[in-house]
Image 1: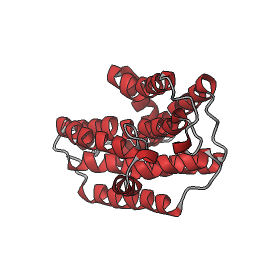
Image 2: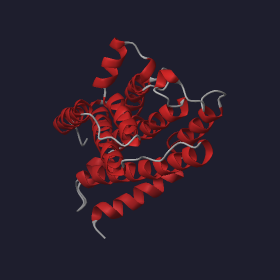
Image 3: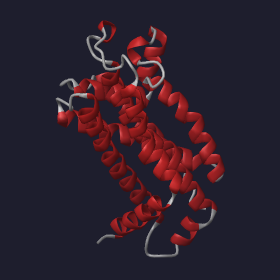
Image 4: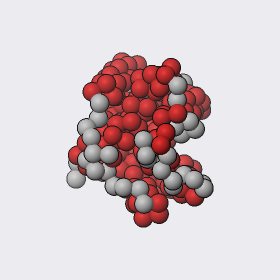
Length: 246
């Protein structure tokens, strides 16, 4: 087993020992979907949504929320705390390089996001008759692009934050606006032109619309793919430039 895989297994065990991780990353998205699905009227088709139901619209938003929670709360907090406590500095004296730690965190976060996504889609299908993604390759591609963009932003937060507390604060400042423009409080279909344009240019807004398109059987729009790639390249490049090991 490679060093990255061994670190991934170890970090995953540590992840599941932290109760807050279990609540925010694993429990809240499925619970939120169930609550939304039980709201009266959310299961009725609406002409203003192109014949879709509100719960159909909210399912990709919850999938995006899964990635965002890990990217903007767990990942930057853990890496900034490791740097603050000297864990990354001490790793530089061992055969395991700090870059292996980052790779392990990204691998673990992506895998956990994928598992929770499957749970959410299963609940949506079995509990509220939401259709499974009709274009599965497109859906999986968008999921990976969204994870790449959001985890790159999480790494940038970890790079810029002075410590664990700072990483949490910056992550939360970004967390709620990201969810707003993804359509958690106001569905994208109900946004005015200005808000919709801003949403299209955010990584999570582009991801949610692309997930919705793939769920209905279409490839994502080039604009949204470009937005996710630009955010991934820009944030990932800045994170690599400014990340400090100690």
